[in-house]
Length: 248
Image (cartoon, rainbow, N blue to C red; front, side):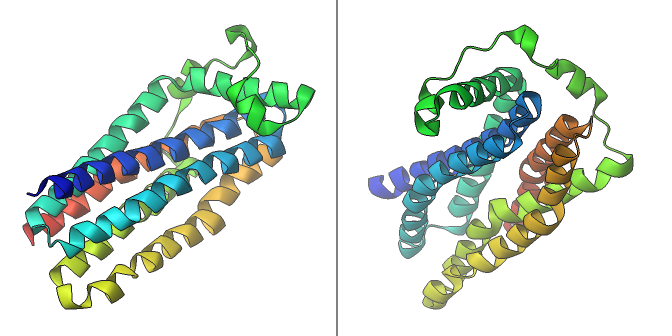
């Protein structure tokens, strides 16, 4: 494998993990919004974090196109996808383990913003928040239940983020195998991502927002159920689909 091609593969995995890390982190700002009562500000903070992922996405897409143009082997390509999904899943676990600290950080950003304004400045200089002022995150984990009314949220999140996580990769894998039509097929990733976006917008996100707006006592728990659904969708469902492609 030429050196630049190898570097491109590494950078795709790195950018992909960064995109998923920032998106996963951003959902914890909604938990901070419930704790601080700043629900709209927390949503703005989430969207601000999402914006940062666009820079990584813009960097990643040409690299994947270059990899396809250089006709990377099918096995090597799928190995790259497995590595990217594994790396993203690992970062998810790190976020979950340190979620209490991350929520505390977002609370600090919100508190300083309420006092001084200037969201971008507050992101880099959050107010110090004492641990005692936060909900016990361990209690939230211990109370998570995958059944009942939240079962749909968990599996809905899994389906949405499974589609989202592999849409681009699957489209370019098809382009790799139908090389003469690679330019047209590469654009198909938008269709898969659009489906995931529709499900997220009209099924998953409203359930989270409704719980937060109505001061549901389990609003924070529902955010975590969605995040665990995302972890399941990327670490298990998406990996299984890629493995299926490997076996075909």
